[in-house]
Length: 251
Image (cartoon, rainbow, N blue to C red; front, side):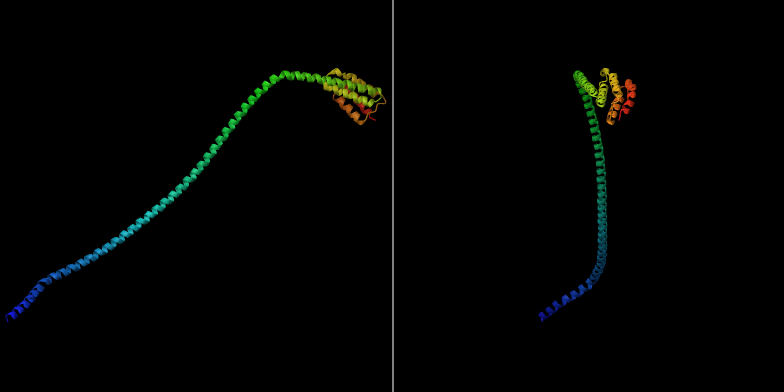
């Protein structure tokens, strides 16, 4: 019996304790539940705030990235345009410098060429003067020798032509005699001297024209007329007196 009572006592004691515990813990649990709800609300608020903050940060980062890309593109375009302008400017400056250098080189070359030509011209004049001075005595001697030779040749021609004219007149070849005498007149003009006795030759032609047997061809008339016209002025009066007679001798 004592064992049964002890067992009942052991069962009842925990039940009583549990009832007391439930009565004292209930307000605490209720208060904790309310705080938990408040924490959940605060946690939700914080979560919303974090989401908004993240969204704002993402939008800001996107805006910053867009601005950075825009600035980079603007800088690239500006750099490219500036580079192209610099290239164009450098090319223009290069062309202008090339043209200026070309003009300077040409002007210097022309000036050098002019100075060289002037120097050569002066040198050439000096050489010519020296050569002329050296050769002048020799040239004078040669000129004198040539003049003497020409005179000798003219003398020989004169003698031969005079002989031919006299022989033609003796043989009554009057036209040929007049032709030869006209050649004597030409020789006298070439010699610029009265040595050939122009007056005597004109007298011989006058005599031959006075002979009725004298007959001249057209070529003889032309030859005689031209020879008479080439005589010096002091013989033109006598020549003009013979020209009509020569024309009348044409038969």
